[in-house]
Length: 401
Image (cartoon, rainbow, N blue to C red; front, side, top):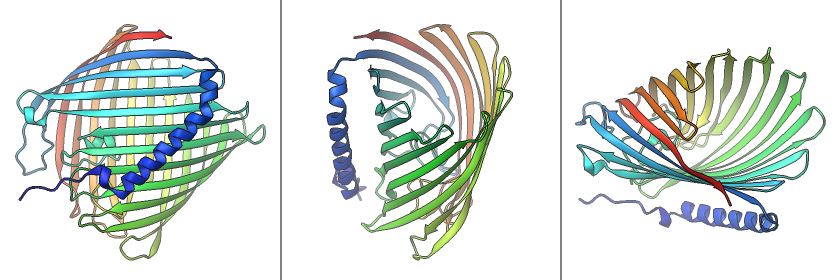
């Protein structure tokens, strides 16, 4: 039986998002056109990244399935344009990445990443930003950013974000934001989703070193399930925390909060907790960081339930010389759903890399990374991958119009 393929353009959610994105872009263009027409400086930059990678699980096969290693050549030209005036900066980026496999050419593919943003300084106290980001890839670790690995599958994401910040008093600031995020899979049995969210935040500069902050967040998620059915979920969350600096070389950030969500399956609501902690420290030639975060996140195409993401990460970097640096990192992530624990995966990452800035326009990198995912629920797969890579990054053109 021939496998049915989803047509993204036929989805009501996708059509709605396309209309909103187009409308938002048109409105922004009309508002910003007088600023652009008045004359601006435009910077163009072209880069290219090439990488030779050894992948121990090139097909992203689950444990027990037939997979295999392979060498992959990555070619990624990048294009950037920045149009800037006194109060307005418009930035456009586009980077396609070609994956060319030596032994499995049927896996060859091209991913795409594009972004368009506008930053506008309304006054000395207020500013706003609008941004649209698009990705197309077959790597879920690149698109969903949740630490959850799906098997190879075409994935499209698009997000539209609008934010506004203002200084209410000398010590008090406020921020407002709204976003629309869509996550679509080509696989007909995957769960597509769209999330509309908004937030309001306040911050207070208690001392020159310490800032207090709090926020309220609202989100509405719509899920397109296999078989043509759908479900919705609403969440409300409150967070409070602070950040402080110690002797200009160390920073501590702490926050905690609660989230209330309705259960898509039963219609009942439930509470859970949120938290974040980060420590950063710098020395003359070293820098280190340690992070923990518990947040609600995307279900990565496997369920319509609320997904909680717990992550711990740490990193250490060392500048051997002005142009040569090395770094190591490690992390642990758990994704699990509520109220039913249908998804419960744990993933482990570790690696090291080195970068040599040979010239201002030329750099070389080398490193390795390890990823292992274990699934304790009925959803998700046990997957393990190792990468060893060597890359070259070049700025082939940079100039002004």
